[in-house]
Length: 317
Image 1 (cartoon, rainbow, N blue to C red):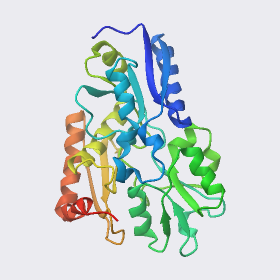
Image 2 (image 1 turned 60 degrees about the vertical axis):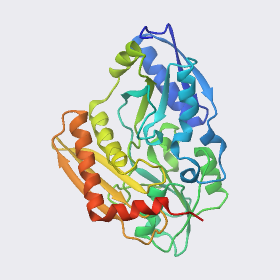
Image 3 (image 1 turned 90 degrees about the horizontal axis):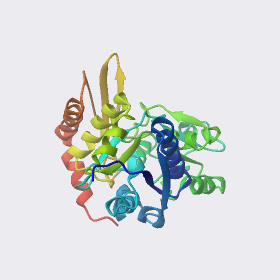
Image 4 (image 1 turned 45 degrees about the horizontal axis):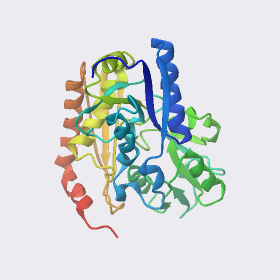
């Protein structure tokens, strides 16, 4: 199973952003390798369930599963994912062959009237379905009415334009990739709102037995991004790797060292103070990057993170 396919097929979700990502990789593969590359559009379970929070129905992995089935059955050879949607543990027989250079990893504030969420009036409605964003918003502005926001990017923007929210929080990368940067009212500094593990990075997933394909794709990897996201994902993996975990983890390079910060909130009670941990080290390979991430996770656990994680098992209303 290690021969290169003559025509490479990319499995992709059919949302506008997912298709942009797939077309981006398709163009990259044609340009870099001269390959023949087609797309296989698919609707995933995550795209179909719009009436409930992802954290309550199986997490971000719902966006990945059907694509993996297409890889398993040989209908496609690779899948392109926004890395923050990829579960921390891939199923046996699958692996990340490459991670491309990161786009802007920050969150974006989108609002018709208010320059920053700090400027909102008391009790204003803010839309997000990310528990990571909920706990950080509540830590900064406990008075805000933070409401669920599901759907693809265009649906979320439409709900905002209809007046359902005073503002919404989205990933800056997605807006920029779709040519919607003008919708960004302000980009939120990571000091204010720490991004999710892998945010802004694209990952290419393949079957582990596709060795020739895997080795070719490895040449697309952007090493600084690869090491940073390995550290971030190691934090989440060490804490259980659940989508229903209000965890932020963000690594960036400073003076030749990788600095990583993580924040953990309570999944049910946003009034509980956020736990924070930060470390930096010289990192030259994925083993060192993952060790750095695990050390940060250990710091969070030492501060009482286990008590917060226990809340994940509590029955939800």
